[in-house]
Amino acid sequence: MHKIKGFFLLILVMAIGQSQGQMPTGLGLQFHYNYAIQGMGAGLRYEIPLSSTMAVVPQAKYQPAGFNSIHEVYAGLAVHYSPLQSNSAKFYLLGAVDLNQWFNYFPSLNSRASRFNVLPKPGAGLEIGFGSMALFSEVKYNILWKESYTDFGLKFRGYVSRKKRKNPQLQCPKIL
Image 1 (tube, rainbow, N blue to C red):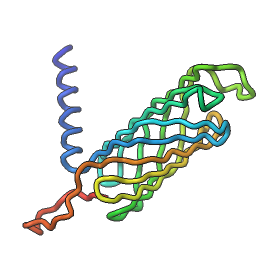
Image 2 (cartoon, rainbow, N blue to C red; image 1 turned 120 degrees about the vertical axis):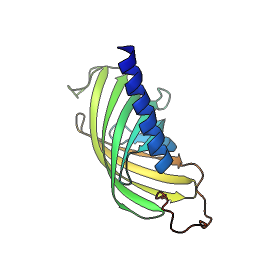
Image 3 (cartoon, one colour; image 1 turned 180 degrees about the horizontal axis):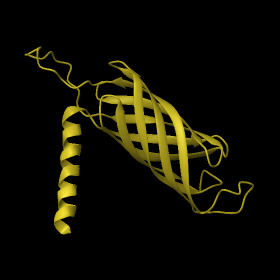
């Protein structure tokens, strides 16, 4: 059994290494705004490209009690599909699922809300890159609670060289 787990772990590490070798990953700092409750928070995300148009983005967000009437934390995974992209910008559609813990839970008008929640969120985003960094903004809709969100922030994509290649025949991965 341990050999099987080790084998799958090795394949996962090799797949992530292969994707990182071909396309840049990105670590981002994000700010979160919930329009319905006027709540603010911050979080981290890590973009892992699967192809030139698809990426998975694990993320975590925290909405502290000091700024908000609702104190909660989110941990989730989004899938980004980028049908429109150029060298410096991309538009993407996204589907996300967040696990939510509402720390100061109280019964409200929303009968679907509880202390622990699974929240499906479709949405769209725009990213504008400059060198090794990119600004991003996303709009999401929480289907369960019927609330809209905006996430925006800065993503660090690693070093992006502006030099010409010595061998122009060599194909390089596309960088925003």
